[in-house]
Every structure is written in structure tokens, then in C-alpha cells.
Amino acid sequence: MVRIHDTLDTAWLDSSSTSGATQHDETLGQAAFALHLDEIPLEQEQEGGADPSHAVASADAEHRSVNQQPDMKLVVISNRGAPFDPNKPQTSGLAAALEPVVERSGAVWMFSSENRGDGTERPLLLVKAGEGHVAELDLPAAHYRGYYRDYSNSILWPVLHSLSDRMSRAEEGYDSYRQMNNFIARAAFDLRDRDAFWVHDYHLLPLAGDLQNLGIERPTGFFLHTPWPTPDMMERVPNYRELMKSMLEYDLLGFQTNRDLNNFVASLRTYFGLESNDGVVTTERGQTRLQKFPIGIDPRQFAEYLAAELSPAEQEKISSLLQSFEGAKFAIGVDRLDYTKGIDKRVEAFNQLLAAEPGSISLLQIAPSSRADVDEYRKYKEDVENAINHVNAEHGTEEWRPIHYTNDPFSQAALARLYRAAHVGVVTPLRDGMNLVAKEYVAAQDPKDPGVLVLSKFAGAAEDFNEDEALLVDPNHPEEIADAISKAVNMPLDERVKRWRSMMDKIVSYTIHDWSADYLRELDKSRIAVPADQFHHLGLGWTNEAQMPLYQNYAAALTAYNEIDPADATLKEAAYADVKSAFEALAVPLKHTQDRLWDLSAPTASRDGGRGQELGARED
Image 1 (cartoon, rainbow, N blue to C red):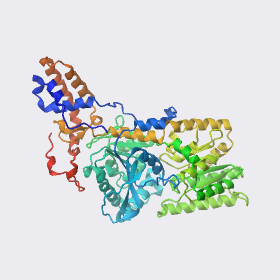
Image 2 (cartoon, one colour):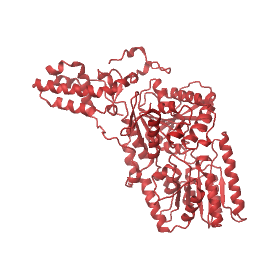
Image 3 (cartoon, rainbow, N blue to C red):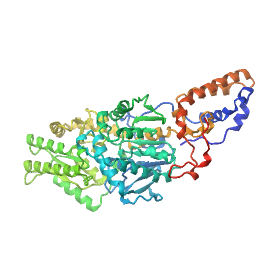
Image 4 (cartoon, helix red, strand yellow):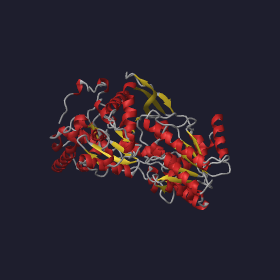
């Protein structure tokens, strides 16, 4: 991240002094700093996350995007992390998305460990992971259940997926949710001198405010991996107004799809009367930018998975599975055992399909167990298993089983082989932020004989893949899924190739590296650029161009002032008046944000939010 040094450009001050200018020496510092700003490439357009549906495939897309990523010391914070081992299964789509970012960028990734602690704060232990580091936290046992089970996963998760009937009716857990966010913020205090913070997912909606209360004034962005629901759905969450207000403490909010972004904007309008102007929401805190950043995958790495050597045990497991489908067509579904994934509807679809077309296709359903301590998940697991047993009993024979079902996790390399062998990929969640399985299935296909993707129109990936590419279905209607699978099984080769080629071009043109680079470039614009103590009308602190919509007017007036011959005192004086007028205009919307924009002195900072005595009073 580019920052302006505290040293004034005294040479410029000496050469540009005139009788007019010296009468206003209180503004010389700001003019000098603006001159420094002129030397920095200024990105004037608010660029959203690139839409892969309009991108052109490029073989060097990965390298291009990595090179464009800003050079910043980044902190990534999420509830769960990654194994950083291709031979171990990923725990989630979030982990799959962030692992390559950390390995390549040099970021520190902070996430919860498998252990529970007593709440004692300890120094972070950084463990090397590629170019980056990971720091695992032992979250306090006293608040873990309320934070994770009761509020995050029994209230927020179902509502964010527009499944309020799955929501716990109890309102417990919110206090623990806030307490846990505060604990995580205090742990992040050790990393306060890094350039920016990138927070992920619904477990940490209020974290930005907790970071700021501790005096951490760095660009802070948030990315939501789940969907965002309509206002009438969101208001079913206890403390929803407080939660949404806390989200506006972030400088940048990222969403997977236009639908999610539009739902969030509608919620702001409904609950607070706030409007988004060109993707910017202005509050008393300052400005928060709202943008779409659709997650991709790394197709080059996925191709490497296809060639990677498996462990003997996993190789034997894969060979056994594929042998059971030998000579027959099969579809594959890979999901956590979660009610949002629509596995029960998928099984019913196979029941209907096999009744109409006996023996036409099998299903390999991989569903690692998830949140087994939550009652809703235990009940859902029983429902899915009962439905599978019914289909197998109804349509199976001694030689053939319609549905092969396993809760075993698989490595990415093993999944790549299974995806490639499957004739149909069935990705039919009831709601999903993106669903990377859809993109992984496409990336694993044989270009000469690709399979067909059956995709829920309520998955984020459906905004990337249109109906001429994937077979889009309503996941709530098993008959639609059954018809789509039947169509996929009987689809001619030339149509399969055409559909696959179009989807693959999009995957290659917008990868996980483009996603992270786009987001971090936007975050890099967010706040910290100019020490505001050089703007004497505003006081101490930090601010930047993105918070000053009238900055360009000021910069143009300053340029005109600088181009006037110092000997022409009258013109210089008039031009200086224009500079001052433009500066005062840009200062107006900033004054109400300055109470929190302090230039924190690290040696005197404390975890309880103390800012140190030597900072002094703010100048207005």
C-alpha cells in the first residue's frame, strides 16, 4: 500500500512561496502533500469485481492477476481455515478459496483451531504456509456454543439461505457471538501494524467495529461467502439492525452475486433509509463501498490435481468406487451434509428418474458430516439416509445399486478423478453463495468427452453459467432435476462440448487469483493514504481520495495554482483562493468522521482501546 511520508516537500514550499500564499501558511502543508499525491497513480473509476461472463479467456490470466495484486501486508481473518495439504480434504468452499491467496500473497491468516481455550489472551504463533503464515486461535469454551452453534449456525445460517423454517426459535447466543468477535479482535491486535484486514463470512459480521474500538485504523474489508436474503427474511434475525449497522464499519463489503448485493442494498433502504450511490453508502462513520466479487477456482492447479499421485489408501478407495460404476453412467454430487444443499430433493429426483427410466444412471453422493452437534443436522442426516435406503430398495438389484453414498471426505486430487469420470455433475443447493463444486466439476472434464453440469438456479454459480451452458433447475422441484439429468445423460457429444467449452472459458478467464486481486485492489483504495494532520482544517488522523469525492476539484485547482508564474502575485492570489475554496468543499463531508481517524502511536496502544496521552487534542 502506498502511503505519504510525514516529511514535507520543503523545496517545493520554498520555490512556490508568494505574497499571497504566505498569508495562508496554515495550508502549505496540505498543498505539499497534495503534490505528493499527484505522483501516485490515482484510480478514479470505481471498478467492480470483474464479471467472468464478459471476460476473454487468457492463458496467462493467473500470472496477470497476481502481478496486479497490490503489494500489501495483509491479515485474513475467518472462523475456519485450510489444511494446506492437497492430500487432505478441504473443510469448506471458504477454505478452498483462501488457501491459494495466503500461499501466494504472504498474508497472515488467522482462524480458529480445533481446541477450546479459557479466554486467556496469548501472543499469536505464526506458522509458515507458502509465502504466508497461519495463526490458529483457541476460542474460549465459555462462549463457543453460543457463538458457533446457537447464533451463527442455528440463526444466521438458515436465514441467510432464506430457510427460516430451519431457524432456532431461541434467541440465545447473541451475547456470546459479540463476545467472541471481541476476543478475535483482541487477538488481531498483535497484527495492528500490517497494512489491511480482510474478514470473511457471517461468523464475523461485527468484527470491524471491534477492531476500530481497539484503535486498529487500517483498511478493513469483509467478504460474504453465503447469500444475503431479502429484507423481510433478514429481519427474523435477533438484533438484525445492530448487526447490519456494524457491517457499515467496514470500508468494503463484498458479495458473490448481484442478487446478494441488491438484497443487501434493499435491506439498508428498508431498515435505515440509506441509499447506495454508485456502490457507496455514506453514514456518520464515513463511507462503505459495496461490490460484487464472484469467486473462481484455480483451473491450472486443478489440472495438476488430475495428475497428482494419491496415497495408496485413497487410490484403493477411488479404484473401488469407479469399478462399481464400470460400464455404466453415473452422476456425482459433492456436498457437506447440510440441509441447504438440497441432497434430499436430489435423491427424490433420482427416485422419479429411475421409476421412468429404470437402470439409466447411478448417483455417487459424497456428503461429509457437518455440525453433527446441531439437532437440525442430525435430523437431516437421518432423513437423507432413509431416502437413499428407500431408493436403493425400490430400484436396486443384486448386481446394481442406484445410489452410492459415503460420508468420507476426499482430497482435491481424488475428487478431480471422480469428477472427470462422472457423466453428470449434480449441484442443486436450495441456496448457495457460489458453490465451487460446480466450477471444479467443469474444470475436471475431458475436453473431448465432457460431462454435463446440472445446476441450481439459486446457486451463485448460476449467475456465471447461463442456460446455454449448464442445465439450470429449481432445486425445490425434484421433477425438474430428474428431467435435467435425463437430458444430460442423452445429450449429444457436440452439444456437450459446446456447453463445456463456454463454461471453461469463463473459469479460465476469471480465476481465484483474479477474485483476490480485484478485491484487494479495491480494499487498497479504502482509507489510509494521507495523514490528515497535514490538512489543518480537519485535524489529526488518516484519510484518502476514496473518502473525498471532491478531491479531483481540489487537485485541479492546486495544479492551476502551481502553473502560475510566482512573479504574478495577483493571479497567484486569485488561484490560491480557488485552491482554498476547493479544499474547504472537500473537507465538509470529512469533518464528522475525524473523531475516529487517529494516527495511532503503536508503542502506547493498549488492548482496552486506550490511545495514549501524547496524541493531544484534535484540531478542527
